[in-house]
Image (cartoon, rainbow, N blue to C red; front, side, top):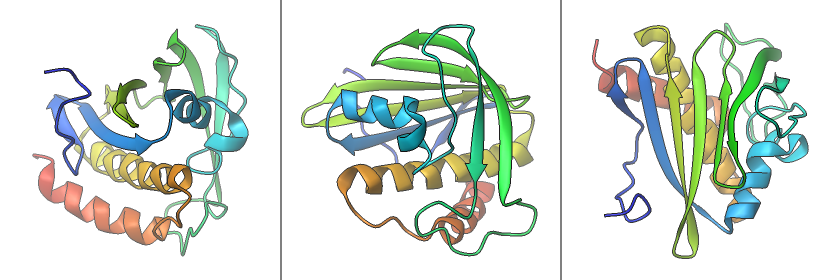
Length: 177
């Protein structure tokens, strides 16, 4: 069975210690999804801004503006209006694979594969520093991917922070202690 034919679980899964994997089927072409991963103006709409040079070893900064996400809602305590994260491109195979460091919280890999008239996006976040961070990050990636899915489909995303809080509770139950 190819990765594209695999059943996509509704939640991310811990695939090895400190590693989270989330799969999502998205509408459209690989090139369109790739643009949402790599172009600052498009990535800002679902995750974080930041110009990314398409070269292994290139440093870049991700900038979250937590109140600017479409349909953001009320941000929970402990989240600033803006958050910055230093990253570096570690692997690049346009438009199929992108990996980069995630500050001091591991490394993120996005893999894209054609799946009929959709794209299978596989996000793998490795070397997460502990269960508490993993539950926050799992809820975060899940909620951000919900926004990406809605943006690409031309739909209104769920209220981001309410969705994140609900997902965090779900992941606290799903991720083993």
